[in-house]
Image (cartoon, rainbow, N blue to C red):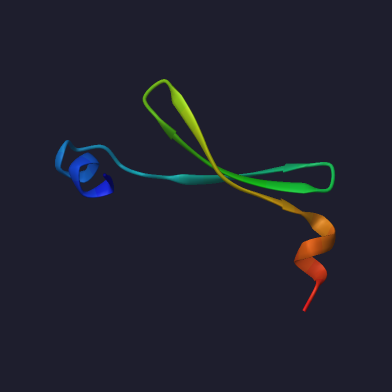
Length: 47
C-alpha cells in the first residue's frame, strides 16, 4: 500500500504523541489517522 501512496505523491510521516505514561505512534493520511503502536512507558524501560 505504501508504494502506491508514494506513486500518488503522498508522503508518509510517522508522528509520536506522549500522553501520560503512553507513547503513541500514528500516521495521518488524508482525513484518516492510523494508530501504528501504543507503548506504555514502563515497557520502554524493560531490557
